[in-house]
Every structure is written in C-alpha cells, then in structure tokens.
Image (cartoon, rainbow, N blue to C red; front, side):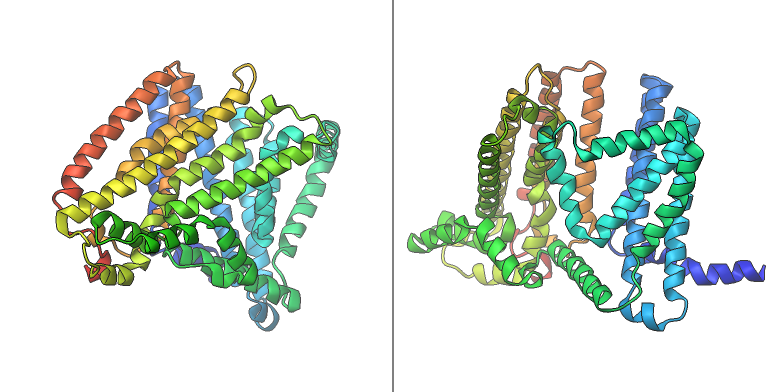
Length: 489
C-alpha cells in the first residue's frame, strides 16, 4: 500500500496536468460531446445498417480519442520539462520519461487489444500505434515537421515509385512476416528509448527548444484571443504577415481617399479595423500567395518531370482540399476573437459621422458578414470542383465537397448577438473543426449508402435558408446594437 501511495504521489500530478491545464478552455466539454455524438452515430449505424459499420465507427472514434489523449499528454509533459527543473530537481526528468514511456506502452497495448481482437494481427496494431505516437511526439518536439503532414500528402502524386520510404516499408513487412518476435523486441526497446530522448535534460539546446515551444504556445493563445502574433516571430513573421495581407494597405488607402459620411463607407472602414486577419483582404492575399507558389512549383516541376495532373486532381488533392475548406471556416474560427480584441476601437468608431445605430447597424453588419462568408464559400467550391474535374475516371475524393456542404449552413452562426460576445476560449476554435469533420464523415456515409449528392446539396441549402431566417429574426432584428462587443456595449 505504501508503495502504491508513493507511485500515485509521484506520477499522478504529472499525468493529470493536461486536464488541469484545460479546465477553463472548454475543450474537455467538446471532447465529451464528440464522444456522445460518436456513440449515437454508432447506435444509429447498428440499427439502420449493420454491426460491422457500427464497429467501424467506434474503431475510428477510439483511434482518434487515443491519439488526442496522447497528443495532449505528451505536450503537457514537454511543458513540464523545464530546463531548470530538469537540471536541478532530483528525479523530475526521470519521472517525466517514465510517464511518457508508460503512456506509450499502455496506449499501444490498448490499441492492440481493441483493434487486434476485432481485425486480427494485434502485434501489428500495437506496433503501428507506437510508431504513430512516436511520430506525433517528434512533431511536438520539432514543430516544423507538422508541415510534412500537409505538404507531402498534397504532393504525393509526384513521389517516385522507387522511393526510399517504400523500400523501408517493404523491408519492415518482410521482417514482420518472417520474425515478428524479433521485430517486437527491437521495437519494444528502440521506440521507448527514442521517446525518452525527446524529453531533454537541460542545457543550451534544451533552453532554446523550450523557449521556442513556449513562444508557439503563447502565439496560439493570443491567436485564440484575436491578438496579433507577429511579435513572436520577429522580422520574418512581420514580413510574412505583410506578404500574406498585401491587398490590405491598398484597400485602406482607397477607403481613406474616398471616405464619405455614408453608412456604407463608414462600415467599410470600421470592418477593416475590427475584423483583423478575418477581413477579406487578408484572406484574398493569403489565397493569391499560396496559389502563386503552387503555380510556380508546378511550372518548375514540369520542366524536369512529366507529372500526371489527373492524379493531382485525385488523391494528391486531399491536402489542398483541407486547406481550401479551412479558408472557408476562418470567420467561424477567428471572427469572435478579432471582434473581442478590437472592442475599444469599436467604441471610438461608433462616434464617426453617419455610423449606423441599433437595428440598422445589425442589418448592415450581418449582410456584410454573410456576403464575405458566402463569397469565400463560392470561391472554395469553384476551386474544389476544378480539382475534381482534373481527375480522370471520376476518381477525385469528395472530402472537400462534403465539408463545404456542411460549412454552408454553419455560416448562419455568424448571425448572433455580438454585443454579448465574451472572451473566446480554445473550444471556440476546436468545436467548428470537429463539427465539420464529423458532419463530412456523416455525409460521406450517406453517399456510401446510396444517397445522391444532389439530394445532399438540396438538404444543405434548405437547412441553410431555414437557419438564416430563424437567426435573422432572433439575433439581428430583436437584438441591441451589435457593436461594440463585450462589456463595453
């Protein structure tokens, strides 16, 4: 009993820290809602389809939950791995490494039991889960590796067939088929050791790594609150910010040169100051820069290779489709934070001549928000349809299309009582992403069951119109003045 008590006192604070750090962000409630939604979806599949589909839904949910748990746990362990504590607190680093290795082994064994009992090959599932978790931990240690998640898959159609990774993969498969016990032994020794090295023991390299991680954490926290993050990235960040928002100063000079005492002119100037990086000029600048870089890369590669552009519109377009859908979701993710950050500026802007008030302000602001959102949605739809048209044989993935059909009614969420907008928390950015991913999965399942895409589009449009009408009546016509937001209202 005394040894169990000592173990709990030594390790439980380290393992419970991720949940303590997220008590006030709302993320835990989002994950609970996601779990309940998954269980309801699995029950519906069991009743309407079959048990195999229900087990598939539960399996995907279980894998996602384990990966999320591992990600937040290891990120918290890295945050607790302070350089000073690692050098001066006896046993602190050893306990952190024991927690990381223990979590890796427990979650790998859980994956082996969950998936191996249903699909067979439990050793393969356990080893695969351990490799994936080690990869996630490495990406948390070196954040630049995250770019490989999006860039490499989106350019996958250019990979040569004799790539090194393919040879390594076939070698591991041969080893697993010939001597699985030796592979398990080597992986059981090597993977935990590699994971333990990701938690550093102090020194100059550790201090630089920890400062970089803290800078990113603070930057994400400020981004959630709608604050500028350019201060964390120095001259490089400032240059990139100016590059990706190049239309903004041009539009600002145009508005100031043609300023008039009219509601339309005043609101155009006010939204430039209040919407921050959610303004259409910033989004247009980012889109044009990214498309220009892709065009330059495509032209450069075409000089040395003969790429199959139909494959680019097929599996190679998944990464780009995710980026295009993210562009549409930007207002849902960051507009609340931008408006809350600029509430002081809004209080001053209300003194401008011809600034509309009351219901007139609500109607004009709502129209501008919806116009920008649906223009972004239409542009995203055109880009995704262009990529799908490039694919040969109808092999284009429809993931982005399903996500856009779901994002269409989500735009009605921009109609709300902004005067009561409180300071946003992390859940405000997590929830739309989860809703989009879950809804896109549901639409893909409906298409798999034989539901026509046109019927799905019609249902999405009808739902959008119904939500817009209801929210317009409630939040636009019956609410006080939308600006300024928060307690200054």
